[in-house]
Image (cartoon, rainbow, N blue to C red; front, side, top):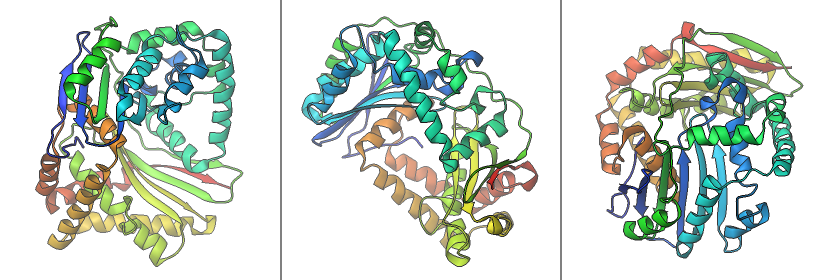
Length: 415
């Protein structure tokens, strides 16, 4: 959901002289947050680039035309700040948390590694070994790995179905030229947003950004994405050296701009959201005591979305757990929420959204994502109004459309 309004001061949106968009939320706090969002992730890789977006994120920290790795890592750490980055399916972030007095230090550092990264050959080779270790550690976490296998089951050979980390084979084949080519293709003025949440005026922020980022000449070429493709349900079972069965079911569903996205978000929150009183947890964990971890998740993207239900349990309890999941889904398909149930669900998700605004970094991420997707940022009042307009019939229709047994795919890890 696009958010946000805090302290009755709305976010400010403007462009730098080189065309990069900026969004800033004033927060009267000592700690500030800022970052550069690149609107490209693992789904924007070419076939031979599998894992390159994530590899680039790592290699940006390995040296610039004026800094070595140590100086990059120490620049904010020396004043108690933090510099970090991450890669997802559709975006890459370079971001920082710091004292409000260190805005320029953070901006200059982010600009340096984003636009002046030199990708030293010896550092690139060392970082390959680091990510191979990351790949191997990921294999030891079936609760995480199953989501990667599920994406592949849903989207096949489409870039959306490939793992973010890549494979050891593709990783070892990457060169400095590959990194530069990928960066030049995706670091365009239409694909970059600088986001800020902190105690600085928009005018002063703009001066700092023009000084350190506005000077860079960027391509205006638009990045074109391959459509997600045709979906066919599949059911896969993998034998693993594990002590618990992991089960994931779900299907592709509404994208970010779909009119039913807010309704499915609310429905997901009722079914298996983060609150301990979600329906799946109350039925499977609290009532029957046969699973420690059960939840549902809805992740919308630019042109598709994924709804999933995850369960970890003993092998002997798997079939009963699946029956209980479907019993809950069938009840949501059969019966509309009562007026009281709908009101309570809306209050819950509104409270969760409001509490999320206590995190300055979450605000920084959210306002950039909202600007990228919708070209604007909704105030909290506007978000709450949209939630208020959701009715029981809409949720009932969504349940009957999404919770369809024959459309579901599944991945099971067993032993």
